[in-house]
Length: 196
Image (cartoon, rainbow, N blue to C red):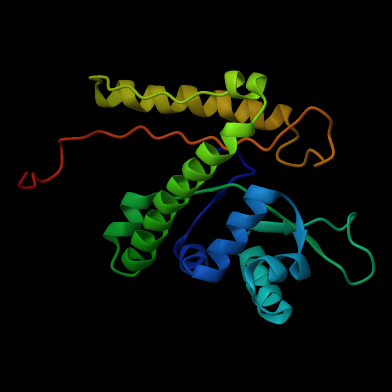
């Protein structure tokens, strides 16, 4: 995690674990910067409610405004990265419910993104399809090897994030597309066993 990524604390987690705020953050990540008015039109909420939720997200450092882009009172918002220690926050009675909700929403969002990609990929130019990947593998690793794998992949992703302008590359940049990257690495078979 670099210094531009917000580590969610209990307050930020509780602030984020709200359906409207999660949807606004999802829209900013998926479609790029937008105003409260544009986001209200996409969500069907009124602009006042949307502005309120955007301010709450900004208060926790999950989004930021882009002052150079707005005119007059118009404010443009963009998403910022975040990470959180889901295990620690799920074990804390104060944050367990919010952490469970956020993890479930992240899994739902990933499924929705992949489903949307399957539909869209039918008409996506072939070179873009060949540039992407879907892979899955299972390895038998030690705890240290797993931690090393996560560190190595995180370094590559951080370097790419920096080259791409830390998420601030203009939407109009030629020959670019918004790219979603999912990376999960988790051990299985170490928790309480469940009946088959």
